[in-house]
Length: 214
Length: 214
DNA sequence: GCCGAAGCTGAGCGAGCGCTTAGGGCACTC
DNA sequence: GAGTGCCCTAAGCGCTCGCTCAGCTTCGGC
Image (cartoon, rainbow over all chains, first blue to last red; front, side, top):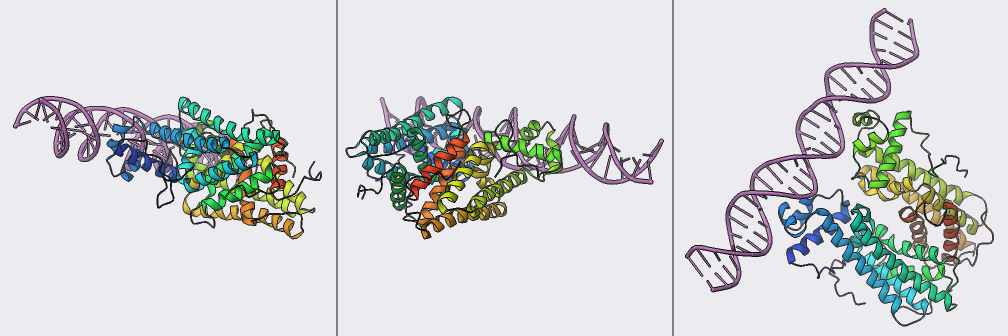
């Protein structure tokens, strides 16, 4: 749960698994370009230029431009699933686990907004097989949150009318942070995380979080 | 508040203001194409083809491809603002007006998902001046929702910690419907609207909607 | 029956796209 | 110190993009 991969820019860099170094620099450049302009509006020349390389260098490390998006999307979704899974499977009440899941998931979307934007909004730019793989990961994210809500219902902590609908709304609320969050805005990622955890607990019928999160 | 512009496909067609007929057909074709593939991945040949015309016909009615997006975006945002304004300024308690605003806004995002997708997610593809104009409309949408929440607070109906944060979360929740809603899914636009109105009332501290909406 | 305006098409221009290829520089092996 | 493999670049191929333009058809006015 430590965010040791964070840089001075506030942007997460969990790209240590991408080697060699040139491939990682290209991938980070692609994340920035895709987040700014979108996948289709980004050129391979732009990506290579941001990484300080010639356009041809990209094709030594990646077969196509789409493979770059695929790698970014898979690593990002694995990280998102890891965040939700960690919160869902820790010890504690459903109330505490839901607050933890929402606040850490929102922190990731706000702090790593550049990455999260690509991960959450460029899914449709992938081809059919790549998209199917990513959609499977998204379903696992959904299942983790739904599990917490079902636990809370069974324990009598929560009061919800529609489990699947509430699950969708909770995830929806978190994901949309990547769309609107601005580093120059009035809140830090931590503050948005705490605020959203409170709002979500209200949505599931918990009156007030009993000092669950720091 | 009547949705008389709705077709059999469940898609709203408030494009009556676009004349002549050929210009309207091109605009509707552009909405569909932009929603499916995104602005940058859509070609002018695709738009013209969907409208049953040659590529050159597009440039008789629109100066550039971007002007098409601009027109779509402005009309869509004006419609969104109209929906929120109508709900905000009707008679009734803040609770009723907030439930009305959320359910009708969500219905628009779900039922007119094709249009809403373009309106909400292709904003960054506009040039600086066009984007500035649209951003101003968005701020007016924000102000309408914030106004209802402030009314509810003043009347003692609501209990919220952060007015601006809650406003943002409410709009965020509604807007994200355009991303995930599927016509083949388990809910109708009406059902999602009712469900989300309930969730939002919980977010602002209203225990249960007192039969506010039909 | 002729005319001008309006709406549209077929053909195509210049530019920029994703991606390829031939070859250069450099570290390392023996 | 020649050989080998790894990264990387300069140049450019084939293609499709947004957009243009000359000319065709259609139609109302007189």
